[in-house]
Image 1 (spheres, rainbow, N blue to C red):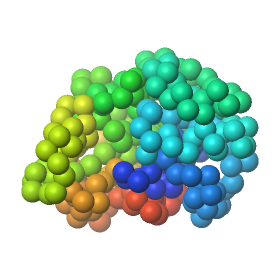
Image 2: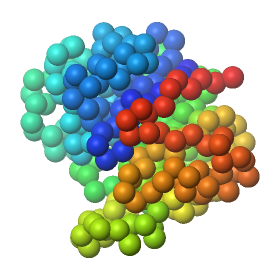
Image 3: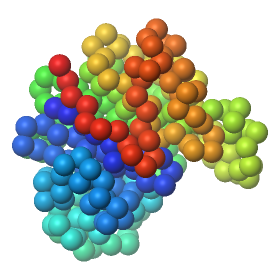
Length: 255
């Protein structure tokens, strides 16, 4: 199994997860042309995809999903709530598969386990992926951790973990008060310190990869995110990866 990112942040999010002959796109907040270019950078085209998983209906995660799915006849998996919250374009999708937020399912060589998260969307989920040997946990949009989130992410071989903002930078920044409140709320986004607290609660003895994701370009820096997460693991800050808004990150594989 291996994974990569096409880009991560408020202007668009998309990840690739691959096991054997199965490749899935997790979210697609980029337009078709940009998505094709980003896939090409990783050596793929839409024809190589088995389909698209969707975490929730916010535009930076779903903005390009339906156009890409319609153009290339791709199956889209999402929760009932997400499907209900996205009327635009959903009727044209050739294959929309509705999933339960607690029930695991299989797509080709990938075992996929969704789990619900606190976020200001209709029925948001995040995912743990497995090929039978390794587990990849992805959490990019949640306002706080829960015991179930901790349970799902414990023992993973790789984690893509939201580090959206630094609290001091957010409070001092120029966002209007209502937006600051939304971001910092229990249904908003994780700050660096809260992400580190979540990481500290997990069993990380198998961890081979740790990626900080969904960083705010206005209210965070890669250095701050790395420092927060590395402090928990006692590792070099350079060992912690960062998903860039424009470049994402290249393929990561397991040993």
